[in-house]
Image (cartoon, rainbow, N blue to C red; front, side):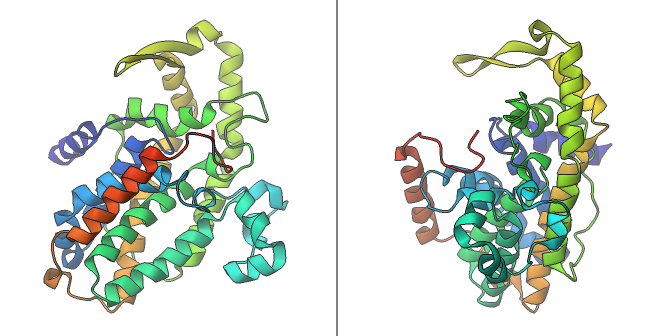
Length: 322
């Protein structure tokens, strides 16, 4: 019971906002992943848990600022044909040689991005670079979590091809924000990944296998529930917004049979596992000897990045923009 209360407190302490896995969910996943780490790591990561939580959403904030950021969040598996998740090259240079980089960026590169960042994080541990360890850990947690979202693995990412526009926010934002207080997030200690590249590709494959049920169950429920029951209005700050009703969201959640909870648990476990694996592969450096907080230079970098994001144009960026 004490452990359940602790998770509830972690959840309720986080702000809510409806964007990519929901800002709420990304922050929660990174935060909970810290508690999967071994004693040799958890002290350093707990000392920086607010950094890892607050910056879990920075990759989304950078989408309109950093060229090439948007494709890092998804992979349109279905545009490559049957069994694509098993046939696509695991090496990014090989994929570029086969498909061309423009095509890859158009349809997303999330598994290649995660594999690349695992190598970068390992190098950061080897260099004892606190700022880079924290920066990469926060960002990689975001991309791993995105790979656990079924709608990040399909060209029909927002139901726009099947008359279900809005389903993206329903699945990855509305349901967790309403119902995650009841989720079981205790995943056990982070495992070492013998084959991290294969692991992230298997994760994308698992997510993609769920796309059919995500779309079908929403369509079936929408056919039974009229719009005046499907949607409602709620106060968000100073705004009154139209959103999926609580009744619709709860019934959709019931029909999914815990799918969102399972994928969030998977994300928590994988984020911890990738952090842990990078540390082990770096030779298990002593993190107790590192500075316990990011440097002033890192704080300035974050401030500049936030300012650039605030001043960026609001026009959609190509790549799962809805």
